[in-house]
Length: 374
Length: 47
Image 1: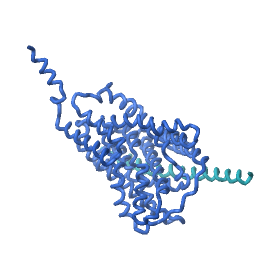
Image 2 (image 1 turned 180 degrees about the horizontal axis):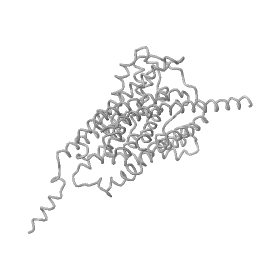
Image 3 (image 1 turned 90 degrees about the vertical axis):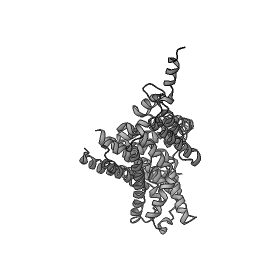
Image 4 (image 1 turned 45 degrees about the vertical axis):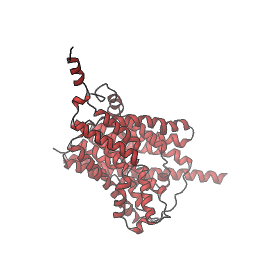
């Protein structure tokens, strides 16, 4: 009897190639899946990311090798042609009501101020030894916008894609934990009690025209932001024009769900132990947190600064919603405001800076591409 | 070796650029809204 066959079968099992790193990655994957299921932390992303991470850390599966199952969507839809983040933006556009921004365009400034953390972290990353492209990819985590982080990192530093994407989505999920202490620290009780004037009603014509005006202005100023802004706004046009309900429903349901599955699995797939278990992954998580805290603080402080000049004062808590994380950051502003005054409703007002934050982060990403790739 | 001059340029042009973009968008949206509201009011008066 030839025992060499048994010997080679045993050698070809994953067990013989298992490393300690793989087991650590299983634990991390399990943590993501557990947090998603039990705490409802960004489950739509963390479940597929966790499973993708788990499966690529099973030795010899080779799912991310050239031509294999996860490599194909990763290579063609994220890395090479950056298709998935813009499609996700189309879905987000179809789900977003830009009415609060149209009713109160000043909130766009708060969306810009909240990008400060992006640039602080850009410098922090450089000090920790990352190069310019890597620093930009880490800094953009401060915008708390997963698709934009993936879009930019895939172009500037694809080797960091797993860590930056997971950091961005993790911090987006932790908005209710990270933001309230900063909000309480930087505002007084009186400021948190400020009641804002009710917003004016926005007509349908304004809502239909907004995506066209926004696309025109942003794409003329920052052409590299066109894939994200264009898709965000076409999704919003589907929603607001009222004559393509089927397209709007597809963009905000089936299409976004399909690409989210591939996105999650592929991002998880970029995290084999050999790539992820490095000190730089820890640095990225740390820097991402710094970025997020600075963005929150900058939004709050800018809102306070604007109050020095405004006749109708704004509640500075809405400034913290200038980080993207739609609509969680706006909800957090509402919760903190209601802690001081149960009859204070600022949710709709906070949605203004919240969606403006998305536009701000996309603009920041476009400017990084303009400045660093040319 | 980090190119600090490029980093500073990225910060100033980048952060400044985000602000300028959103200020222009704010003005653009404001003007657009005024035009739409103006036309709507005019039509209401006519009818």
